[in-house]
Length: 305
Ligand SMILES: C[S@@+](CC[C@H](N)C(=O)[O-])C[C@H]1O[C@@H](n2cnc3c(N)ncnc32)[C@H](O)[C@@H]1O
Image 1 (cartoon, rainbow, N blue to C red):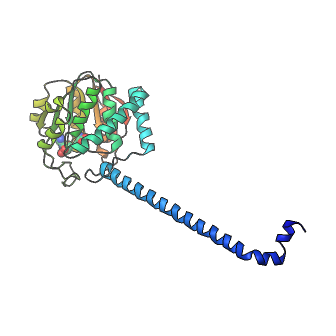
Image 2: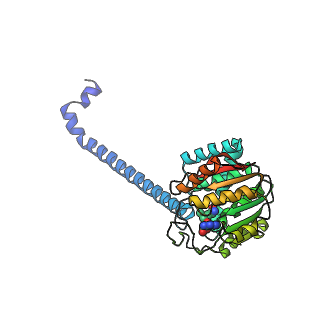
Image 3: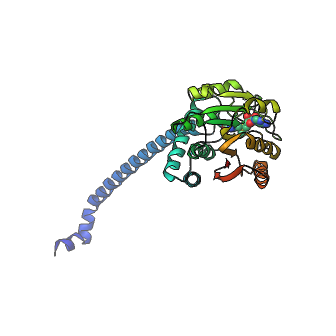
């Protein structure tokens, strides 16, 4: 009888059962220990991920600004395409969008209030304007809320070697004013006033501190007279979002844009503000110095002749 046959006889099986049982028990114990260690490691990992998520939420989440600053790959890649198309330079587009994103997070972390709007729209505006090579460094923002976008634009233009000089027009009514929209306090909890704007502009250094702030409605003749003393290389239209309000601001932009000046129309194509597209379509169908350059996220870009 060979060894194999010897081990498989019923007598030897009976004799060996206690040994086999012992081996089975040991294997089971080891497997249970391994399972418990694996579960423990998974629990630790889940705790770490939860803590990291919590930390990221505090830095980038929607609390205190209404909208999250967390980025998704689809919208980011679309924004790269749009800015690249407007700028004619993909590498510069990707670089500027990244710089704009870091600036946005930095400004909202240090400033009073927030920048209005979605992350891609803000990065699109901040990233594209310098790449369109405005004809001079005079910037006008119509409707500023907390002045933080202008602070960001100052920094983006300076990064491009320019010396921006900013003029801002806003009624500073304590809250954001929009026709047909109820007055309510801002998600940031900060009152919409000139103090917050000054604080935020100061974050952009000397050019921010030197900004000219004109309190009032952009359609008021007094407001217009006070700031129509120059031709602007960049005009950001982001005040009254109604069709009538946008139409008036575009008409004003016709008069005060420098030759080659860039006009940015914010929230264009946003279903929340249909009047913006309506007003631009009507405006471009008439006699105008403005030509359509393109769109990045929810902002339209135009150039004055
Ligand atoms: C959407 S917020 C501006 C956001 C800002 N540009 C930013 O990027 O953070 C609109 C601002 O325009 C102001 N506004 C409303 N009607 C206006 C008008 N007729 N002229 C100037 N500003 C106006 C609002 O009170 C508010 O402060």
